[in-house]
Length: 384
Image (cartoon, rainbow, N blue to C red; front, side, top):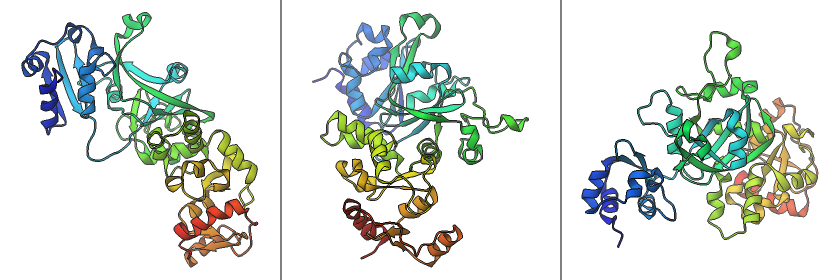
């Protein structure tokens, strides 16, 4: 039996979202003195192979934020009855290259009541499988999937005089082949930016400065803004952005190679997209062939497809964004011989306003594509 069992039971029985305890309180509860390392090293309070005490409360859904100078710790809950994922925007600046190559984000540890650096404190609320957008030199340059919860770590010796100890999160970064400037899309982005601690300027005496980066570090952003950024980055459907993370894939017994391919297929990178473009080089409906304006849309949705179906280029169409919006919602579909099926008269009116002749045929589909289109017609379009 663990010598910290009384502490674990105390946390498990608590209905509060956070608990502040002094080291003395903990020693009184467990009936023994904490080891010397708990007083000397912040890392004792973070889970690792050697720090088994922390692993115990992490398993119960708690994290610890320790204040070594006051010899106190705040435990706060990280899990609840509702499973959700958070989205973050990190203004990396000059540290972008180091963070991406090193596979992390980090910042110095500051106190809870530090009103000067609230966006540094945000990092301790990051959890495994959150999504992070990295902004540097006025561009979104990478998208990351967190591989760990936030933990406390030691700064490398050459930096300790500057920053001391730090918070850190391991991140699997996916660098964008072509980064984009959020300011170029500020009319779309501005309504979705947070009112407090925004990563970009939302107000300025000089209107030309709206959309410039703010001097902040890590900002919480909404799923709507995350979806927009994802779409601007990859020109791909972002309706299921939460499914790009490794958590869903890790539940299945698959190889690391297949796992990487699955993640990248959802990020619009690599083999899947290139193979799809070899089959569908343009939008069948509009004729647009410029890849920058095409969305790789799964015929049988990613959410219900098997791993092999998710990576199969025959389960995809390259569509212009407005056509993809209708196809994704099941408002249009296609017969095997390329005839467009239209849900109702209101959709017909929309297509006509776009100059789309929905009565024409848009090219016969292959036998492999027809297999997926059968699912789309039955389950999304509602064609029996």
